[in-house]
Structures are given as C-alpha cells and as structure tokens.
Amino acid sequence: MIAPVNVEDFRRLTRKRLPAIVFDYLDGGAEDEHGIEHNKAIFQHIRFKPLRLRNVSERDLSTSLLGRPLAAPLLIAPTGLNGLLWPEGDIALARAAAGEGLPFILSTASNASIEDVARQVDGDLWFQLYTIHADLTRQLIRRAIAADYSTLVVTVDVVVNGNRERDRRNGFAFPLRFSPGLVLDGIRHPRWLWHLLRNGLPRMANMAQQQQASLDLQTALLRRQMDASFDWSSLARLRETWPRRLLVKGILRAEDAQRCVELGADGVILSNHGARQLDHCISPMQVLGQVVENISQPVLVDSGFRRGSDVVKALAMGASGILIGRAVLYGLAARGEAGAREVLRLLKREMDITLAQIGCPSVAQLSPEYLL
Ligand code: HOC
Image (tube, rainbow, N blue to C red; front, top):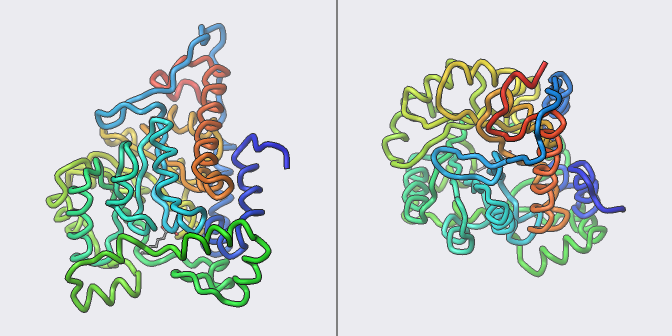
C-alpha cells in the first residue's frame, strides 16, 4: 500500500494488521451500525461559507482549554483495551499526545495502570471514570489524584454495555481467549501475534490493582458492568470527592448539560460513544449549537470525526475541543506511537488547510459565520 494520507488509509492498514476479532472490536458499533454511518454523514450536511480576500498567510491552531495551553483543540479520547492494538498501547498514545502538545485521557478500562502512564509520560494526563462500584470509584479517584491527573472525565453513556453484534458473533471477550478461531486468525496476522506473544496478554490494569476488594466489589469487577443506578445525586456526590476539573462525557441534551454545570462540572463532552452504545442515536453535532448557547463552560465533542475539516466545523459551531478516538486508534494499531502521531499531524494539517480555505487565520476566530 502507498503511504497513508488520511484516516481512512490508516483504517485500511489496521484492517490488514489486526486479526478480524480485534479489528471488529475497534471498528464496530452497536447493532446494525447505522449510527457509525450517521456520525460521519452528519458532517456532509454542514457546509463552509468561505470569506475571501483575507490575510491567511499565517495560521494558528493553538488554543487554551480550562486554563491550559494546547497546540490544537484536540485530545486523545479515552478508549479501553489499547494494549490489544499495540504493545503498551496506552503509553504509546499518551506519548503521541504529549509529543503533539495535546492532553491524553486514560480509560478506566486501560491496559496500562494510572501510575504506569503517569510514571512514563510527561504530559497533560486526564483520567476517565466508569462508575462500576462505589468502592472502585473511591480507589480510582484516590489513585488519579496521587498520580497527578489534572482532570476527571465521568462517562455516563454506558449504563449497560452496547449490543455489539460483531463482538458477539466473533466471541470477543476480555481477557482474550485463545480460541481455535483466534489462533488461526493470529497466524494470518503474524506481526500482531508476535507482539502479543512477546509482551503477554494485556490485562485491565486499573481494575486488577484493587486493594481490599469487598465481595460485592469483586463480583462487580468480574461482571465488568456499570452501576446502572448512577444518577444525578451520585454525580453530585462524586463532584465532592474530586477536587480538580471535572467533565461529564456522554451528554446529548442542553438541559442535561445545564444540570451538569449546576452540579459543579467544569464542562461537558457531547458524545454518543462513537455509536458503540445506542445505534439509533443522534450525533452530538445535532445538539452542539443548542448546548453551546445554553452554558458558558467548555463544550467538547466526539463521535465520527475523521477529518480536520470535521474538527473545524465543530469549532465553528462553538466546541472548545474535539476528542479523537477511533481515528487515532487506526494510527496506533497500524504503526504504534509513530502512527498515532501521524494521524494527529494529518488532522492538524487538514485543519490548517481548511482554515486557509475558509479565510480564517486562527481557530480562536472561528465562528458560525463560516458555516452555511
Ligand atoms: C469495564 C468495562 O468504552 C468501548 C468501551 C466499553 C468499556 C467497557 C468497560 O468499547 O466502547
């Protein structure tokens, strides 16, 4: 294959390198996967209205978010099981983010622990929390504070696990079981198999490290299911236990965003979890404008971003930052840290070209005026 020039090229490389069972876990969505198409297609309905004869000889992608400088309004989204895609996948992603001047959000379901990532990477680290059990939450929060994570992202859209039929058909489960099918698939993907055999099967490091796990915490950890009773009062209590910046991820309604802020959130992340949860769900882009009008705190967004021009559209609509999930994972799975960085750079490059084309010299000056 010729050198990859866009995210879709990296997706094709990833498909070649990974066994189908792992590729499907990364690439797949809920049920019929209409949501994945919808998340991407929504950008087709948002068009630029370029301003002409503007001096765009110098362009600036830099910004600041919650008081910290960023090289561009991009963050690496929290994604689980990155160690299946590349050895030490979480560390590779965190380094790619730091190298590009961007924050990295470590998932509760990561393969590297909170402490290992903090020890090995010098960058702005955020921690994403799944609310599985109150004791686990307390321990994870204590550890994230001790390891100096700057921001907590609480995910609220995985009340139950999404109905992912590719995974069910493939018998995908974690820890990965070496079924005859996977072994055969692995042999057909020797580079992936070699990495896995050399480094050992990844584990969910944050959950493996629990001290004093009560019986019901042990049960919750084994089931790996969320606490479906987590509600607004739980969020209010959680806010009291985390003294630093807190964002709520998975919000899709203006009134919910408002309520998060009233409970002390420093911002929200609009997301439908990359269409991995509810197939027939709106795209966050469909409510971004309303949410931005409703609250003055930062509104971040993810789900379906594959192009720098997608990012520019969201910024013009008022987003303060875009979380990049699958797109950067295609880079990671194809080429490790270098591939993740290549994807971040190509997104930055596409953003820069888009700014020039629409006559806007900096992301700070983007506004709805640039859109139809
Ligand atoms: C502890 C189990 O975000 C995904 C993940 C789902 C995480 C399950 C966590 O695959 O979308």
